[in-house]
Image 1 (cartoon, rainbow, N blue to C red):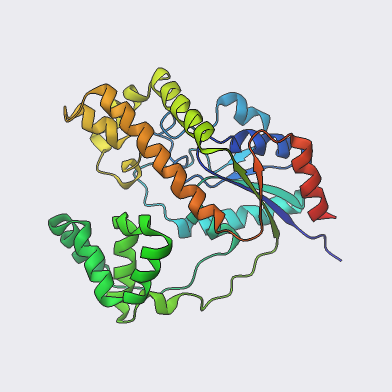
Image 2 (spheres, rainbow, N blue to C red; image 1 turned 180 degrees about the vertical axis):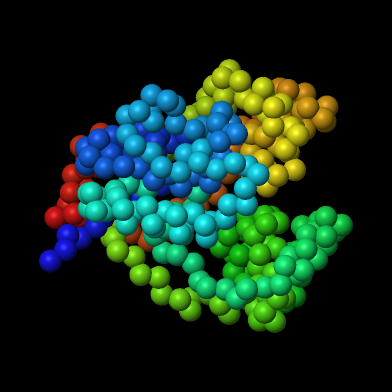
Amino acid sequence: MPKQNFLITIVGPTAIGKTTLAIQLANYYNCEIISCDSRQFFKEMSIGTAVPSENELKQAKHHFIQNKSITENYTVGDFEIEALQLLDQLFQKNNIQILVGGSGLYVDAVLKGFDEFPDVDVSVRENLIEEYQNNGITFLQNKLQELDPKYYQFLSENNPQTLENPQRMMRFLEVTIGSGTPYSSFLGKRKNIRNFTPIIIGLDADREKMYQRINLRVDLMLQNGLLDEVKALEPSRHLNALQTVGYRELFDYLDQKSTLDFAVEEIKKNTRRFAKRQITWFKRTENTQWFDYLTPINNITTYINSKIQ
């Protein structure tokens, strides 16, 4: 009888200590780490995305860290395919592997997969991009509410930040307009089979401590040269990968729209908001065992071992 595979999955808000725990568990179980932090894929972005340090990368084998360029069109669907292919290889060496990251959509891609959508003529996306550039996010929101009110209401109640994401909104509308069928009608149709059992570990802290850790991380990023990194990336600022916290605010500073102190405070504020959204997302993930970020490693391995046996 083949051995059962287990994917230890570590989730939680930014700056909570997921990388440290992943390395400890990788060494304990003698396995490797798949990163699903959608900002750490890009080789041109390291300081502002809190990529694991050289020392951390030496302590355990990591995958999907700075393996793409910001100029590549790399989607969550691409990541799902590549991550599952790699896991198939890794499970041949060890039936326990680790997935870690704060990008909920990418975690879901590996654990559950997505539904299958029809191919759509490229002109539909081009028209939507033009409409967005001319009329802003409100146009996309109104269009989705008109064409797929069921899904619009679901997002409003359960995942409102998605309504502010133009790339995701254009994807919903692209499928809806291109197929003539609401995006929501394609959801839940496909059963994705996985050859592993997830063991999901959530890391948390009280709100004040979490915010302190975020503020400290931002200060350290600035000390380590974040502003210089942003200056070097300014010619590419239009790319989707750079439409993210830590970069947008400093681009505004470079445009003389704000002072540096104001930009830094905005990074901290927006990162705190991002962390709250991460917690909301992961708290909805079923079968997650939550631990305080200071929990001793042996308490966590005891829980994991109880699931593996």
